[in-house]
Image (tube, rainbow, N blue to C red; front, side, top):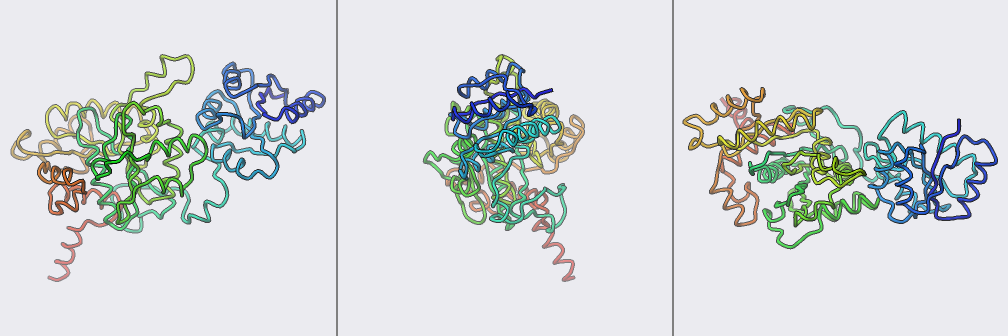
Length: 446
């Protein structure tokens, strides 16, 4: 039985020759529709009449989002490029097209590539064809960026040998429920403390409801940041050097990728693009700390008959790609109630990752005489998990850092909040905490 395919080839002579060859000989493929442009191709893909598509690299408006929609429809994609066009080959592979062949290839070669791509998609759904789960990176990246490989198992604790090399970076997503529990401040301070341990760190502002990290570190001008990176990723133009150029270097191994400046720009943060940005960020830094949005709803896609933009898609993509998820709770009655409800939604939305709980803004004025014990008991009773960190509420230190546009570690190094976050950073990065090192030194002296 022949494999039904679609074609969207800009060179009419090449397309006509291939279609004619497929009709004359039994090569295992049958063209069910010749599409004139990308919208026509996407519309034909939704009918379920085909299982593969043959398209040109210069097809207008071809991007990662379009390839993702084809993959969702079960369409395997094979790209045609002009002979010797290395730029087109690189762009298609960065978009996730696994099979790229020259346009002067014989009909037998083209048919074989289409059949093989369809078989691969059926065997491993989501691999290639627009999915960033296994992107076809262009050759040369591994040589230029040593250390790239599979991620090692990771957990809280460990020793210095567990610190990943650049190229195998680990993603730490910082999430919190509605009500501003302080996730942005925690993400900023955590990234700064990990960088202070001598580990290259990238802080990404992925809050689709309006990021604030740029303002917190004194970046008053509107920087392109994550939105520009996502656009480049969607067009297949993003690579590690360009991602590094879009980041702001704060020194001491800390980079920042600012988020969107206005909430209305959320459509620029496509889920597939976010996955690509994170995949490249793993090659840029050893640790990537991502400030996520609070909302986990995905109901908006149910209101459309076709693939619709999802405002919370970026947050869900980050949480699913993260190696560690920190769930931030604000230590007051209202904040704790919101957290318990939000944590249940988080566990349901991302069942593959068990979040680590961090209690923020801990203070006796709203909890009682022993806030650490009382809050820990409440968290354990209602969530079944104990907090991995309790961060005291240092309003004066945090206000001073925000007014100055500087990091808390620099403006108030003795802040109790800073010390608690430093301890958390040491555990996450697999480094012994400073207090533990000093204690060991005292024991050795005695």
